[in-house]
Image (cartoon, rainbow, N blue to C red; front, side):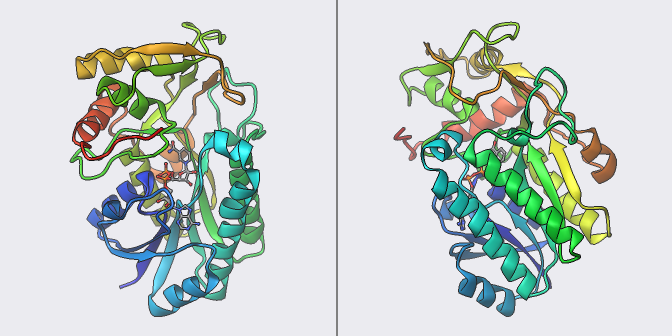
Length: 330
Ligand SMILES: NC(=O)c1ccc[n+]([C@@H]2O[C@H](COP(=O)([O-])OP(=O)(O)OC[C@H]3O[C@@H](n4cnc5c(N)ncnc54)[C@H](O)[C@@H]3O)[C@@H](O)[C@H]2O)c1
């Protein structure tokens, strides 16, 4: 049976997607170098430890298996680190992805679903962002994603790739069965940071800026459940396999929640105190990023099931409460 290659399938979103692919009847092989991923997250399908930059490994993989399509999560994805170490991002996310695309080309694999990001969008931010909103990525991380979207579009025009770029808003939550969840270290995402503060694993949660032009002064984001993201990948694969048009799709709930609203919701869900402290704005953070995902709903038939922010936090809380063996170092 043909397999789906899941690069980065030992990471947060990749592992949830591998699980959903398996339950939808797909055979998968995860390729992950475990730089930020976890071996115990790669529990669905086959696992190969290795790097997308390793052309010989990719040749062996594509020769020894029948790979139908690639779902490509593997990337470095910390915005702040990308500002400090841009080359690392261009090497891993751009050169690494070009290596993967080259191997696909050598072996005649033409179908790809790619993890992109809402960070490709530029101002104005006080509107619902649609796919044709002006693109103006700021960080090397976001630029690396935008560059790869351009490469994929060019390959599509040349007739050698059919791809969907999924522009995620803020991935959040955990597998409702708590078999996998979010385990980044360092953690930079708000909801796990809030829950680690609730668990006493962090002294206090830093709120970066309360002087934004938003109702409570803190930044607003669109949180989307990781399982809903996972399901969008399956729909994107089916769309491409049916001959659907390539392109970019936003994945978000279309609802903004401020940092303070997330903290309040987390206090309610956990029943715990969440100590906070104020910190200056972080460079490059926009005041508001909320997406219009009507194209994904219309074209892919995507219908997020876990959109409620409390439900998102509840699933994350169920996961983090049981992560007793994991201690965040930063
Ligand atoms: N988490 C979010 O909110 C979010 C938002 C927008 C886009 N994204 C994108 O989604 C994808 C997955 O994000 P995540 O949060 O699951 O991150 P993650 O760090 O948990 O997962 C990335 C995985 O890729 C692996 N990897 C990295 N470089 C590799 C390489 N060269 N070869 C093989 N494996 C490699 C890592 O070991 C890890 O398992 C990334 O491409 C990220 O940029 C994430």
